[in-house]
Length: 121
Image (cartoon, rainbow, N blue to C red; front, top):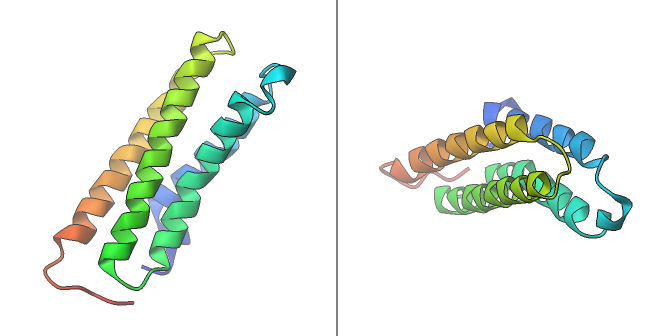
């Protein structure tokens, strides 16, 4: 699974990250080292961990990094919800995209772990 750039979930996560950066530009300046930074780092972590997982040599390692990507997607979702609660703008579209990416990650991870034999890359 070395060619992560062809994975739909990877490309969706890259797009989400771009959109999170655009969305968070409007946050107050005093959030620059708080929620803005945390949200952006979590968003970057999703495609980064998908890519890293695809570079691993065993299914178990690959699945582990997909799990980390899923955790980061949950972080993004939570931080978007906080931003909306704080009045930083509507993020319903971003939360829907984040949930969709999370479901894609779960499906791929489940597929990887369901393989009968350990396939090394």
